[in-house]
Length: 520
Image (cartoon, rainbow, N blue to C red; front, side, top):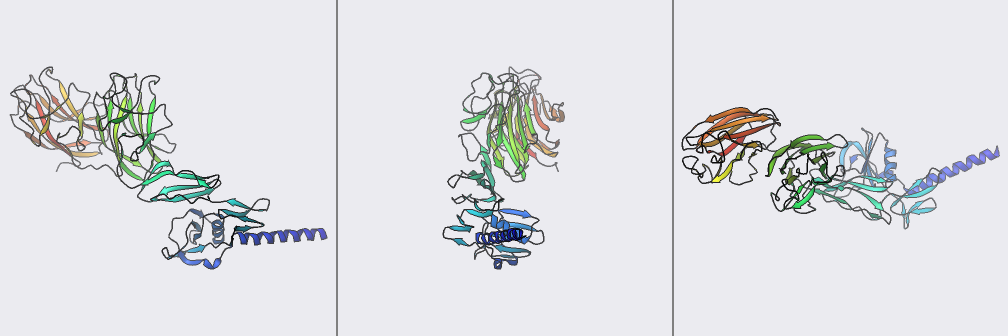
């Protein structure tokens, strides 16, 4: 019986010792609690369904917690790495209690039983009821991220995760740092960029404005190149803008179906972005180019896709709306076709931080590459429209010059053209599902005049003719106004000129305007 009483007394004394040493390790000052107030700061950690004492203890156990907001209504605890001060006073909120930590710290650190914890450690009781110090912070101060915050911390291992402030976009993938032996942080390879266009022109290996990097979940990589590709009868002769572009090299050891993917390295806001770029897909064995999005480990979603030989010229894709959020990435994927003649190239990829603007699209043909123009040359016709200033080369056909500005487009119907040969311009936009309004000027002068058509085509279906005119219309410019055109993301506009009975059938168009609403 005496032995049992002695054992109980020893347990009581041990418990008393633990309580005293715990209080010395982190001694709470309850007089610093303020009812009906909170500190307006971003929390470093949040606990749910806890009481006020547990909230205070969580702050004690956290190496970088100096105060806490406790929500009495929601039973949530917000740990803060700052205290109130003259520049940051408390604000009124009847649901909250503000708690502030006060530690008793000796010259050598915090007393923890019979040892001292340094100022980067916290005193805890282990499972064997011994008091010990654990590191809860790096000796080196936390790196500062401009326009960013520390959104989370862990202590096994010691780490910090950064996020961007609202309105800024994260660039890079190194937003989590860890404390290395010796008390130094690993590099922070992350930045928070203000809103604005993200442009990949590939003029340097490491572009701060570019939002694309090579994927590690594909078969091979895209290649950055200046000049032509190494294979004949495929690939461009050079970049469209600047000196460099990116392409997929489809010679051996590549096989049909092998893919190369570029993936976005940004953390996006939850909203719709606008993507535009130029592409080159020339070669008889041409494969497929895809624009996709992927959310976490889900299957990719294809937003745009093009396959087959598109001719030896650069084309543009404009105004592709892409819904994104912090868990979603953009993929640009090139897939090898049936042979080595399937080098796919891209250049000048632009991502705008807002939905594509569907204002008026105007083709006045004053420059070769017009950002506002929605037309490009088709690869499924016999010949191309020609951009020209001044009169055509044949007599008794064609205009003497442009109607507006200096340039227009026309079909040259001299040899080797034969009756029925067609040249087609096709839209390069991804349209919203609604009705648009088309207007333009045309010139159809010549005794052998052919036909001008306005058509739409949905995927591989037969074209639908919305307007058509044939025969000699005299040596003057005419206008077609207010042609309603129903469109959607799978439908394109075709402007087709067809050669007539002889060379005097040069058809011309100028100042083509597409309005993003039905004609009045």
